[in-house]
Amino acid sequence: MRRGPLREGAFTSKLHDPRTAVVVGRRLGTALLVCFATGLLSHLLQEPPTWLRDHLTSRPVQGYRVTQGLHVISGIAAIPLLGAKLWTVYPKLFEWPPARSVAHALERLGIAVLVAAMLLELFTGLLNTVQWYPWPFPFRQTHFWLGWLATGGLLLHLAAKAPLVAAHWRRTGPALAQRRAFLAGVTASVAVVTLTTAGQTVPWLRALTLFAPRRPDIGPQGLPVNRTAAQAGTTTAPADWSLRVDGPRPYELTMSRLLAMPQYEADLPIACVEGWSASARWAGVRVRDLLDLAGAPEDARLRVTSLEADGPYRVTDMPAAYARDPLTLLALRVNGEVLDPDHGYPARIIAPDRPGVLQTKWVARMEIL
Image (cartoon, rainbow, N blue to C red; front, side, top):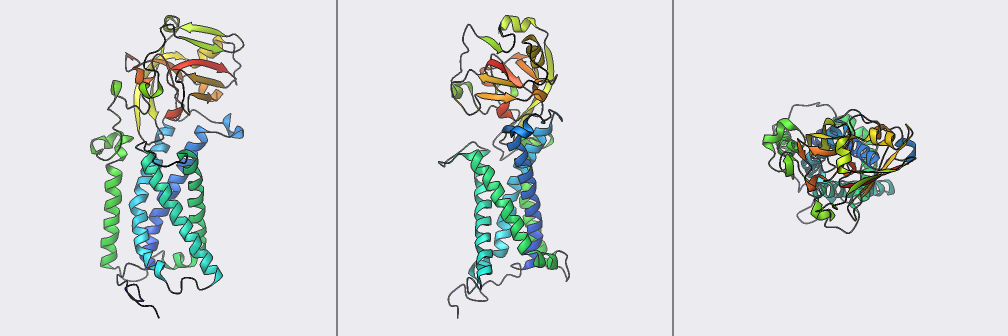
């Protein structure tokens, strides 16, 4: 017989029941699946496989802003939901005997992997929003594979528990006042963490941005900055800076020659993987005009190299759909002012529906591929 404080009957709350677990689980599952789908899209935009690379589209203009905002919003909302879900089921940890059969042991092992993957995924994702990485492994690759592990584990868990979920999907008895109060508390918690962080990408919630790591209206020229010129080692552009474009007809352009070319303006957002975004009015030379000047084919991709000496996005590739888009600019000004060094002076890339890490700053060279 079991002895001690965790003996049979030690957990007296009526909320450690299948109905409560199913109700919370529906909400948690929805948040996690939205988070996974939008995160997968972000990964594909940042590192598209060869078969997808030339089929990406630069529309809708605000697409990445919306999907990455949803990714971070749903991930943060999942944190209190996961806490509530684990609270409803944690007495199961103390079942006796721990494993009644091989199948039961495998099921419990799968749940352990699922919970561990979810906790690590949400924990590392939350710290990524403040750009704090107190671990030795690479964040992006680890986050990507943990997402697959957590989602696969969730689907397997749902398959194993399908009869139980189906039996308690709808309320069959009188509503429990305790359950109503508990679910109201969970809903309020999700609402608070969402409303106080979503303003970093949702303009009409900006006044409520209390706990978000970024306010989208604070920074040089009214825009936030993730990587400063000092961090990139590009605080001062070379006095003889010029843009080099390599292609069938290679050439170089000084700043005065760039300014003498037709100038275009575009209202486009900077949307970063950490979940914040902000719109600005950019002005500069269309990238498609620079391609035409170099004799680039219509379907040519573009490689952009930054002045920064090091960094994972010092060199980025741009598919033809982005390079040829009339809104894609080699920006020289923002909101009517010459670019601040932190925003990429002397020139930067700005393109629609593109992750912020790929909007290369401090551009030195373009190469037609």
